[in-house]
Image 1 (tube, rainbow, N blue to C red):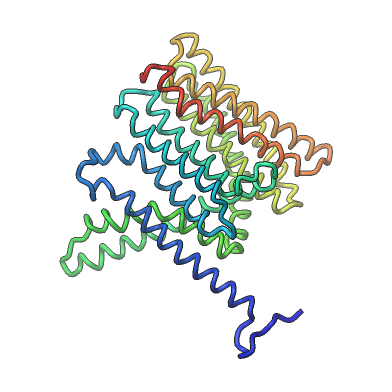
Image 2 (cartoon, one colour; image 1 turned 180 degrees about the horizontal axis):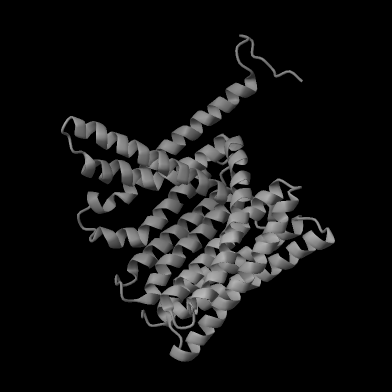
Length: 378
């Protein structure tokens, strides 16, 4: 069916409409990036905020997620005032709460609150992204897929920005102008906080770009990570590394576990979108089994250290996180087993992943808002 043409015979009417929407989104993007840039520069603009490090530690994540949320609200086809007011209230209360906590690097419970506030804001942003539609699992899967896409595009934007920075420094140094400080203070700082917002604009405006990149990355990285994980576990046995008594090694072990779990979720979202990839499903099943074994080792090491040294904020947080991941992994592995060996539809894996997300949100709320008081700010 031919596209409808306006009377002047130039461009299709639909194309003109899309151009207007795209221009509006671009204007909103610029405004939101400027607002985010202004907020991230508050320590320099207002002399009373000191030291700047503590400001960024507490508020940088709030500013990034606020900018992303503001962009999504302003570019939505319909703006629901109630949802926006609820979101603004949560952002305001979170900002007040995190800035009222004592500023100290010695309190593990407070440091955990800083880190888990980012995860809580990620959950809040997810609700905003799906228009608070919690009844549709597909909307949650869209959000998870968006996270993979925005991570890829943000990385590309930052790499391009790094190249531009190197070229800029080289050009100005050739004429004996040293702009490193002013460039870092304004261009780099504002660029860092704006990168995920720009990535979101690209995903929204040019969806075909990321639809081609993300599945390729998921297909490549799943078998590579599986192979690396197997070699790593063999190396742990050969070298005699002991996660039970080596605290730093246990920390690396848990960080690796979180990274692999994130990759599994990302790969599932891309495999769900591009069905028929039998090899990828097999790789995901094998990766879930290996990751489950890693989590069992980590859990046993954490329980051992709890028995030896008692409960601390860090050990309690790591134990809770590992238990949540362990439960989620078992459910994912069971569904992948049924997909591989019993021919069940892949949709069941998607439902298992999305239905578990509220559990993570509850845990982030507990660690962020309860741990500092449960452990006496220690």
